[in-house]
Image (cartoon, rainbow, N blue to C red; front, side, top):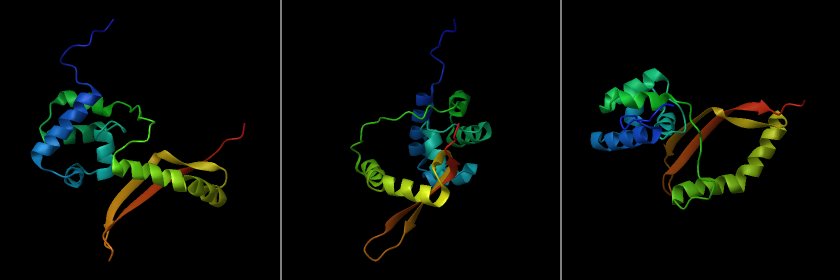
Length: 154
């Protein structure tokens, strides 16, 4: 049986180290992403455990933030993509749930009408966030792009 030693860095440890180092460095997710050649959306999701880093990107981020090599292995592990199924109370995240709750059935219907019976993949997926100037106050533009996957008949 393998024993876990006190030196072993977990995925949660790696995330905590990244967040502390990012804060100390005073860098934005965009600045970090630019420095290692990634999207800030993907970088944050991988840094917080929802995606696995390619090894070279994990090494680049660790070097940039002055983190130990022990963070590389957990950052490159396959993600579990586990999240709390309860609706969160954070206002920003709650509103994203609200968007899916209100518009999810509409998006599903329009995808099925345009592509056929299937889904938009969140595995083969990209997302970009932009500031959109507006006379009534700046807006947040989210652009999501996921591969269409038809349901299989068997």
